[in-house]
Length: 158
Length: 260
Image (cartoon, each protein chain N blue to C red):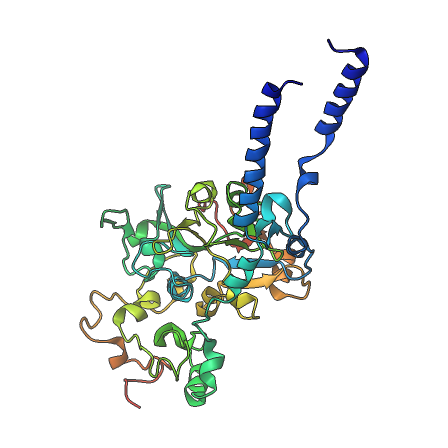
């Protein structure tokens, strides 16, 4: 064949070679077809590990119990037994090292999440004890009269 | 002048060349094989009991803090919807701030800071429905990704590679459940991943831990003794938008026809 055929063909081959080299350099080595095949599993395998390494912030009541056994036991006897400590006290993170003390949400809004009266038939919300925050002792924190660890007890004093 | 012999030779060569699949030209890489290797393990599923949900929104708060989703941005990986069906046949649906602060108002949030008040005696039924990523077995969000940044792991969770995502937003449009959004800080697609860092350590997801009513549960479908698996296998569970063929893996108890 004549050179006018080979010359463009050569250019095309060089372009293909460049694309392959660039691909080799840019695509991470662990990129591959995962367990779910080409359509759903085409990914960088190392990313799975990156997601596993995200820091755990909420350490659960079992973590709090190790030091605050008395509070834990009081909670377990109360109607609030299923509420996790960290729901109101904030995420434990690395407490007591970091942070040394936790934030504590004593706001009316926190209690109102469950105890705003919503008369909903067919939902468990309808049978929960509730108040209208617009008329029920406006301006006072709920914990002034109701002990959150055990709402059967009165007042926020120990 | 082409002879019969050279014509036959060349056409055979071209036909043979065309028959070589592109895959045969790919370079062999053992690390790629490692990524491919078959992994046996759990298949994470979720069970939502809408009858138990009271709309406190602790799950949304817990999720946002645990997964570092900017707290005041109006985006969230999980949210709770309120359905109020009145006796004139209308269904009122809202989810103020994704129920991050629960439902502090009795009125229905109709946007632009306006509330629609509904009289108690007009309510026929009302309930709350938590929503999160369905971790579909056939995830449409993964199919549409042009760069392989979102994928399904062997244990069934759909993840987003933040380093690889180009932020084109196809997956956000492709999800029929609207669970994906644009992360305001990383500028990539963001979604619920069943708290992958927790479930792979044997913990519960942050939303399950923060739910005081047992309305949310996470389980392993490959373990027949798992209490969640038992409920899914033996009780009347439903999924959202089954007609899309996505095979969602979040199962609902007590789902009503108003829920979409």
